[in-house]
Length: 203
Image (cartoon, rainbow, N blue to C red; front, top):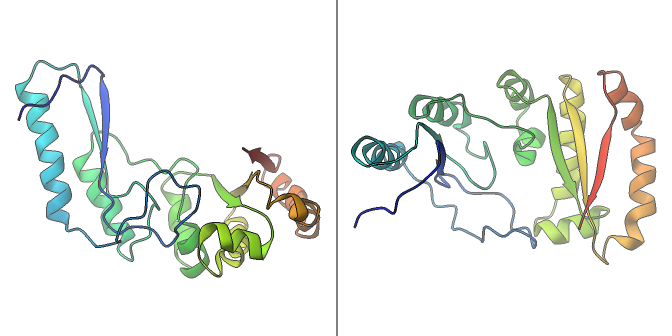
């Protein structure tokens, strides 16, 4: 079947090649099997869009290919997949403020590498204190990982940006969570990196 006309100059396409460690209750992307895909799968997908760009009357000028659309860099082969994304894309792969919180906490080499590919700030999501956060992530240890990730970011000179999700379950924890920010001296430590600590509440 032919593809419908796409009227945009840039397009991004992604495969969930290694999945995600979490099963967050708020996630709109659904719960995949985490069944790994091969490099050939991503190359095939990119080739289909390249063919479309070359043979159809479209305004697309730039293709961005990504090996993830849930947790970035969850794969042990994250460096290889980053290079594959770079090879298949017209522009440098972007991490923006999203990194693998799981990998930040479990892979000591990852924070420095992540900083080297661009982001200077990383968003970390909290739903409350430990019990509440683990419940929302559907993964025991998620809260501790978020705290470890915060420390690992600061160690390499990156700025953690905390997102708090506003729910009824958060309300009993909000005071303690704000006190935790004070105990960790996040405002002062991020200030030393040249900017203010960012904390925001998302509904």
